[in-house]
Image 1 (tube, rainbow, N blue to C red):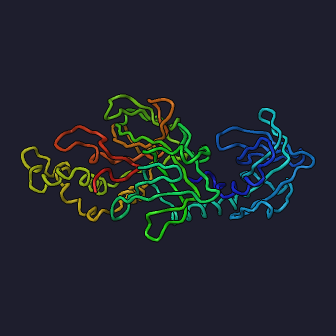
Image 2 (cartoon, helix red, strand yellow):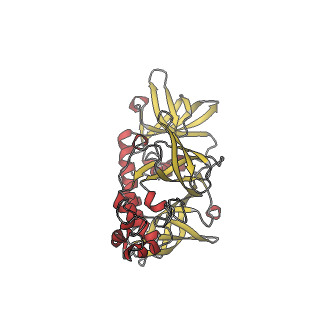
Image 3 (cartoon, rainbow, N blue to C red):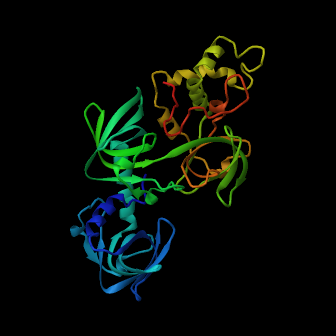
Length: 374
């Protein structure tokens, strides 16, 4: 959810946005003190030359500060490579004649990131939208005791954003209005919850339309950070792109088996009766007949999403042709290309239909965690 730790700082920058001017936000890649110029690369990858006008001001925003009037005036010599800036001024192509620079040092970026993560962990919720009203949305949230609805309304000055198509980068998310959130969207919200947890007054909402795909890897292109997979449901080839924002994890075998037990309870019951361990030889040799032993870890509605999140991270190099994966992504412009938000390997027990060698995604979703089973 974090861009590069600038979410809090943008609230301060917004106070200075009254005058019409071009504004860019990005990371400093070069500083020319003598020429009073900066090279800035935005989160979208565009590079700008920022020339400071003679009367330009530079203000440093410290971590946690949202009042721009408290930002200290500094000099261009105080700016370093990898600092974050917002430059405002007159644009001519990729050059900006800046009258105002807001600066956040690399150290303060890290502090802001850490504070943002901690606050999202403490006050954040995520789930699928089940209802949309004029001034509220309701989402279903998976908890340790099952799925519960939370009604979300907006706090004054709340920020609503929507993920851009083909992008998993929070920095690319566009400002939106609450009515743009749709039933079926996945939402993350941060704010104060009611005592019983059934309501939230949100200070920030990020929504997006996502899809989950299951496939078998056909080829891997490590230099390009992409792979070709065959969609197990449509049987069509698909290109999956991995970038720095993608989460790539692998389920431990016991966790995958336990989720499979939960998604295929009838299969588990058959296994406990010995129906799977008999004449077809699946009772022990390939581990499938052991599903009846793994389900205890999920009794009582344990938090499947947390188990997914706690699975170890891997790299593209750890995968191989023939592996089964599940990928979540935003809905993009091309149906045969996706950029992974989450990629999960080790999912063969979950995807394989009981009693067959056939794989299918079924109703399972990385966004909602444990599918429809409770």
